[in-house]
Image (cartoon, rainbow, N blue to C red):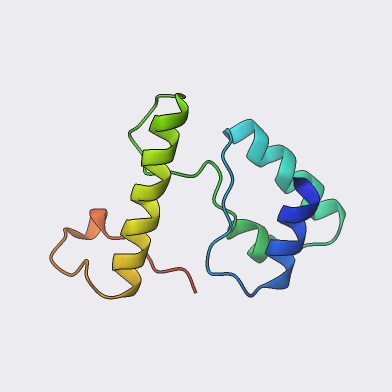
Length: 95
């Protein structure tokens, strides 16, 4: 999984690279990506853990729903469909 993530992040051609995981997993991935020379700017683009905030369940169905919700918010944000939302609810479009 680490090698796939390293390639996806370093390629710089994906709008979104995300992983199911914890803050501990993210820290491990960041450390290993720095070791192979991936820039901090690229590493910062990694979304881990994926999913909208506020859902704490680790049940596979909950992770799936939270992940899809995040992708929908990002899609709508990129399409300019979030203009009616309060600023704190808006998501910066990833490019």
